[in-house]
Length: 297
Image (cartoon, rainbow, N blue to C red):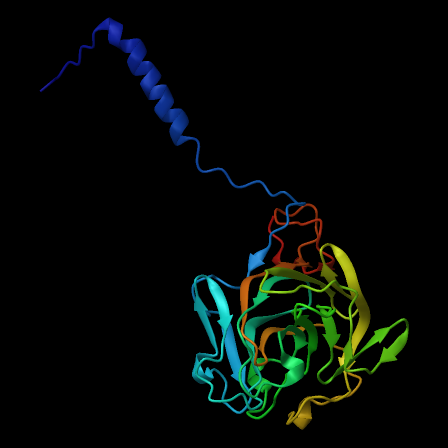
Protein backbone atom coordinates (compact mmCIF):
# COMPACT_ATOMS: atom_id res chain seq x y z
CA UNK A 1 0.00 0.00 0.00
CA UNK A 2 1.42 3.34 -1.03
CA UNK A 3 1.45 6.01 1.61
CA UNK A 4 1.91 9.69 0.90
CA UNK A 5 3.41 12.00 3.54
CA UNK A 6 2.27 15.52 2.91
CA UNK A 7 3.97 18.13 5.14
CA UNK A 8 2.62 21.64 5.19
CA UNK A 9 5.03 23.84 3.28
CA UNK A 10 5.57 26.09 6.31
CA UNK A 11 6.90 23.09 8.31
CA UNK A 12 9.71 22.27 5.85
CA UNK A 13 12.21 24.95 6.99
CA UNK A 14 11.82 23.87 10.62
CA UNK A 15 12.26 20.21 9.66
CA UNK A 16 15.39 21.07 7.65
CA UNK A 17 16.89 22.92 10.61
CA UNK A 18 16.14 20.01 12.93
CA UNK A 19 17.70 17.42 10.64
CA UNK A 20 20.74 19.63 9.99
CA UNK A 21 21.29 20.06 13.72
CA UNK A 22 21.02 16.30 14.22
CA UNK A 23 23.68 15.65 11.58
CA UNK A 24 25.98 18.23 13.12
CA UNK A 25 25.43 16.84 16.61
CA UNK A 26 26.14 13.27 15.49
CA UNK A 27 29.33 14.40 13.78
CA UNK A 28 30.74 15.94 16.94
CA UNK A 29 32.03 13.33 19.38
CA UNK A 30 33.60 14.10 22.75
CA UNK A 31 36.64 16.30 22.35
CA UNK A 32 39.98 14.97 23.49
CA UNK A 33 41.42 17.11 26.28
CA UNK A 34 44.20 19.40 25.10
CA UNK A 35 47.48 18.79 26.87
CA UNK A 36 49.05 21.82 28.51
CA UNK A 37 52.74 20.85 28.71
CA UNK A 38 53.36 23.38 31.48
CA UNK A 39 50.42 22.34 33.69
CA UNK A 40 51.74 20.42 36.68
CA UNK A 41 49.88 17.19 37.36
CA UNK A 42 50.26 16.50 41.07
CA UNK A 43 49.01 13.15 42.34
CA UNK A 44 47.66 12.56 45.83
CA UNK A 45 49.23 9.53 47.49
CA UNK A 46 46.55 9.68 50.21
CA UNK A 47 42.94 9.28 49.07
CA UNK A 48 41.44 10.88 52.20
CA UNK A 49 39.33 7.79 52.93
CA UNK A 50 41.56 4.85 53.87
CA UNK A 51 45.11 3.52 53.66
CA UNK A 52 44.70 1.77 50.32
CA UNK A 53 48.02 1.84 48.51
CA UNK A 54 50.06 1.83 51.72
CA UNK A 55 51.89 -0.84 53.75
CA UNK A 56 52.53 -0.74 57.49
CA UNK A 57 55.70 -1.95 59.16
CA UNK A 58 56.16 -1.57 62.92
CA UNK A 59 59.28 -2.73 64.73
CA UNK A 60 58.67 -6.13 66.34
CA UNK A 61 55.67 -6.98 64.15
CA UNK A 62 55.06 -8.55 60.77
CA UNK A 63 54.36 -6.52 57.66
CA UNK A 64 50.87 -4.93 57.82
CA UNK A 65 50.32 -5.86 61.46
CA UNK A 66 49.00 -2.45 62.53
CA UNK A 67 49.76 -2.80 66.24
CA UNK A 68 47.13 -1.07 68.40
CA UNK A 69 45.78 0.69 65.29
CA UNK A 70 48.79 3.00 65.22
CA UNK A 71 47.99 4.26 61.72
CA UNK A 72 44.39 5.02 60.78
CA UNK A 73 42.25 7.47 58.83
CA UNK A 74 39.72 9.77 60.47
CA UNK A 75 38.27 13.11 59.39
CA UNK A 76 40.13 12.80 56.06
CA UNK A 77 43.47 12.72 57.92
CA UNK A 78 46.13 10.07 58.35
CA UNK A 79 46.43 9.89 62.11
CA UNK A 80 49.31 8.36 64.05
CA UNK A 81 48.29 7.75 67.67
CA UNK A 82 49.27 5.56 70.60
CA UNK A 83 46.03 5.38 72.59
CA UNK A 84 46.26 1.57 72.89
CA UNK A 85 49.94 1.43 73.87
CA UNK A 86 50.55 0.43 77.49
CA UNK A 87 54.01 1.89 76.92
CA UNK A 88 56.14 2.81 73.92
CA UNK A 89 59.07 0.39 73.84
CA UNK A 90 60.82 1.11 70.56
CA UNK A 91 57.81 0.23 68.39
CA UNK A 92 59.01 2.63 65.72
CA UNK A 93 56.71 2.38 62.73
CA UNK A 94 56.54 3.39 59.10
CA UNK A 95 53.66 3.76 56.68
CA UNK A 96 55.02 2.91 53.22
CA UNK A 97 53.53 4.00 49.91
CA UNK A 98 53.59 0.90 47.73
CA UNK A 99 55.13 2.52 44.62
CA UNK A 100 58.77 3.68 44.53
CA UNK A 101 59.88 6.94 42.95
CA UNK A 102 63.20 8.45 41.87
CA UNK A 103 62.74 11.97 40.43
CA UNK A 104 59.93 13.99 41.95
CA UNK A 105 58.68 16.75 44.18
CA UNK A 106 56.69 15.82 47.27
CA UNK A 107 54.57 18.03 49.55
CA UNK A 108 53.37 16.91 52.97
CA UNK A 109 51.09 18.83 55.33
CA UNK A 110 51.51 17.74 58.95
CA UNK A 111 50.83 18.81 62.52
CA UNK A 112 51.77 17.48 65.94
CA UNK A 113 49.04 17.09 68.56
CA UNK A 114 48.56 15.88 72.10
CA UNK A 115 51.07 14.27 74.41
CA UNK A 116 53.90 11.90 73.67
CA UNK A 117 53.28 8.22 74.46
CA UNK A 118 54.63 7.02 77.82
CA UNK A 119 58.08 5.54 77.35
CA UNK A 120 58.85 7.54 74.20
CA UNK A 121 62.45 8.76 74.04
CA UNK A 122 63.09 12.43 74.76
CA UNK A 123 64.45 13.10 71.27
CA UNK A 124 61.17 11.82 69.75
CA UNK A 125 59.07 14.60 71.31
CA UNK A 126 57.07 16.17 68.44
CA UNK A 127 59.20 14.17 66.04
CA UNK A 128 58.23 12.34 62.85
CA UNK A 129 59.64 12.15 59.35
CA UNK A 130 59.32 11.58 55.63
CA UNK A 131 61.54 8.64 54.71
CA UNK A 132 62.58 8.42 51.05
CA UNK A 133 65.03 6.60 48.79
CA UNK A 134 64.19 3.76 51.16
CA UNK A 135 64.17 -0.01 50.95
CA UNK A 136 60.82 -1.71 50.19
CA UNK A 137 58.64 -2.40 53.22
CA UNK A 138 58.64 -6.15 52.51
CA UNK A 139 62.45 -6.31 52.84
CA UNK A 140 62.50 -5.01 56.42
CA UNK A 141 63.24 -7.53 59.12
CA UNK A 142 60.60 -8.14 61.79
CA UNK A 143 62.81 -6.49 64.40
CA UNK A 144 64.30 -3.79 62.18
CA UNK A 145 63.58 -0.38 63.64
CA UNK A 146 64.14 1.93 60.64
CA UNK A 147 64.38 1.34 56.90
CA UNK A 148 67.62 2.03 55.09
CA UNK A 149 66.65 5.44 53.78
CA UNK A 150 67.03 9.19 53.98
CA UNK A 151 64.83 10.95 56.52
CA UNK A 152 63.48 14.44 56.11
CA UNK A 153 62.95 14.91 59.83
CA UNK A 154 59.78 16.70 60.92
CA UNK A 155 60.06 18.48 64.26
CA UNK A 156 57.58 20.62 66.16
CA UNK A 157 58.57 23.38 68.54
CA UNK A 158 58.09 23.15 72.30
CA UNK A 159 56.74 26.70 72.57
CA UNK A 160 59.99 28.11 73.87
CA UNK A 161 63.19 26.90 72.18
CA UNK A 162 64.42 27.06 68.60
CA UNK A 163 63.85 23.73 66.89
CA UNK A 164 64.33 23.46 63.13
CA UNK A 165 62.23 21.15 60.98
CA UNK A 166 63.04 19.32 57.75
CA UNK A 167 66.46 18.32 59.01
CA UNK A 168 68.27 15.37 57.45
CA UNK A 169 68.77 12.11 59.32
CA UNK A 170 70.48 9.11 57.75
CA UNK A 171 69.44 5.64 58.96
CA UNK A 172 71.86 3.33 57.17
CA UNK A 173 72.95 6.04 54.74
CA UNK A 174 75.41 8.84 54.07
CA UNK A 175 75.29 11.84 51.69
CA UNK A 176 77.71 14.27 50.09
CA UNK A 177 77.63 17.92 51.13
CA UNK A 178 80.08 20.55 49.84
CA UNK A 179 81.97 17.78 47.97
CA UNK A 180 82.59 15.89 51.21
CA UNK A 181 81.07 12.62 52.40
CA UNK A 182 78.92 13.57 55.40
CA UNK A 183 78.68 10.81 58.00
CA UNK A 184 76.84 12.69 60.76
CA UNK A 185 73.56 11.00 61.58
CA UNK A 186 71.48 14.20 61.68
CA UNK A 187 72.15 17.56 60.03
CA UNK A 188 70.06 20.59 60.91
CA UNK A 189 68.30 22.69 58.30
CA UNK A 190 68.00 26.48 58.28
CA UNK A 191 64.22 26.45 58.75
CA UNK A 192 62.36 28.48 61.30
CA UNK A 193 60.65 26.85 64.29
CA UNK A 194 56.95 25.92 64.08
CA UNK A 195 55.41 25.91 67.56
CA UNK A 196 52.06 24.51 68.64
CA UNK A 197 49.59 22.38 66.69
CA UNK A 198 49.63 24.46 63.51
CA UNK A 199 49.58 22.84 60.08
CA UNK A 200 52.99 22.95 58.41
CA UNK A 201 53.84 22.23 54.75
CA UNK A 202 57.15 20.54 54.00
CA UNK A 203 58.44 19.99 50.47
CA UNK A 204 61.29 18.00 48.94
CA UNK A 205 62.84 18.15 45.50
CA UNK A 206 64.38 14.75 44.76
CA UNK A 207 66.41 14.25 41.58
CA UNK A 208 67.75 10.72 41.86
CA UNK A 209 71.27 10.89 43.26
CA UNK A 210 72.14 14.23 41.64
CA UNK A 211 70.37 16.72 43.91
CA UNK A 212 68.05 16.69 46.89
CA UNK A 213 66.61 19.88 48.40
CA UNK A 214 64.53 20.39 51.56
CA UNK A 215 62.16 23.33 51.10
CA UNK A 216 60.15 25.32 53.66
CA UNK A 217 58.09 28.39 52.75
CA UNK A 218 59.58 28.32 49.22
CA UNK A 219 63.10 28.53 50.63
CA UNK A 220 65.75 25.81 50.28
CA UNK A 221 66.82 25.08 53.84
CA UNK A 222 69.12 22.12 53.14
CA UNK A 223 70.58 20.39 50.09
CA UNK A 224 72.98 17.54 49.27
CA UNK A 225 73.87 14.93 46.66
CA UNK A 226 74.95 11.30 46.17
CA UNK A 227 72.89 9.49 48.84
CA UNK A 228 74.38 6.08 49.49
CA UNK A 229 74.27 3.12 51.82
CA UNK A 230 76.61 3.49 54.80
CA UNK A 231 76.88 4.64 58.38
CA UNK A 232 74.73 2.97 61.02
CA UNK A 233 71.73 3.77 63.22
CA UNK A 234 69.64 0.83 61.98
CA UNK A 235 69.25 -2.49 63.80
CA UNK A 236 68.68 -5.96 62.37
CA UNK A 237 69.19 -5.22 58.66
CA UNK A 238 69.19 -8.10 56.18
CA UNK A 239 72.92 -8.45 55.43
CA UNK A 240 72.26 -8.97 51.71
CA UNK A 241 70.91 -5.40 51.54
CA UNK A 242 73.89 -3.88 53.31
CA UNK A 243 76.16 -2.70 50.49
CA UNK A 244 78.17 0.26 51.80
CA UNK A 245 78.83 2.86 49.13
CA UNK A 246 75.94 1.77 46.91
CA UNK A 247 74.41 4.92 45.40
CA UNK A 248 70.66 5.35 45.96
CA UNK A 249 68.80 6.76 42.95
CA UNK A 250 65.26 6.10 44.20
CA UNK A 251 63.18 3.95 46.48
CA UNK A 252 60.26 3.84 48.87
CA UNK A 253 58.53 6.76 50.57
CA UNK A 254 57.18 6.34 54.10
CA UNK A 255 55.80 8.35 57.02
CA UNK A 256 57.01 7.74 60.56
CA UNK A 257 55.54 6.90 63.92
CA UNK A 258 58.07 7.69 66.66
CA UNK A 259 55.91 7.98 69.81
CA UNK A 260 54.37 11.45 69.41
CA UNK A 261 50.88 11.78 67.83
CA UNK A 262 51.00 13.39 64.40
CA UNK A 263 48.46 14.02 61.64
CA UNK A 264 49.04 14.15 57.91
CA UNK A 265 46.50 16.10 55.85
CA UNK A 266 48.04 15.95 52.38
CA UNK A 267 50.70 13.79 50.77
CA UNK A 268 51.11 14.98 47.19
CA UNK A 269 53.71 14.05 44.59
CA UNK A 270 54.70 15.51 41.23
CA UNK A 271 56.50 12.87 39.20
CA UNK A 272 59.37 14.35 37.21
CA UNK A 273 59.86 11.26 35.04
CA UNK A 274 57.87 10.92 31.83
CA UNK A 275 57.48 11.62 28.13
CA UNK A 276 59.91 14.31 26.96
CA UNK A 277 59.04 14.24 23.25
CA UNK A 278 57.30 17.57 22.44
CA UNK A 279 55.40 15.83 19.61
CA UNK A 280 53.62 13.51 22.04
CA UNK A 281 50.17 14.23 23.47
CA UNK A 282 51.37 13.66 27.03
CA UNK A 283 54.63 15.62 26.85
CA UNK A 284 55.40 17.73 29.92
CA UNK A 285 57.95 20.52 29.93
CA UNK A 286 58.86 19.99 33.59
CA UNK A 287 59.99 16.37 33.28
CA UNK A 288 63.70 16.16 34.05
CA UNK A 289 64.19 12.46 33.29
CA UNK A 290 62.98 10.82 30.09
CA UNK A 291 60.79 7.74 29.92
CA UNK A 292 59.48 7.87 26.38
CA UNK A 293 58.13 4.33 26.53
CA UNK A 294 54.85 5.84 27.70
CA UNK A 295 54.58 8.56 25.05
CA UNK A 296 51.18 8.82 23.38
CA UNK A 297 50.88 10.11 19.80
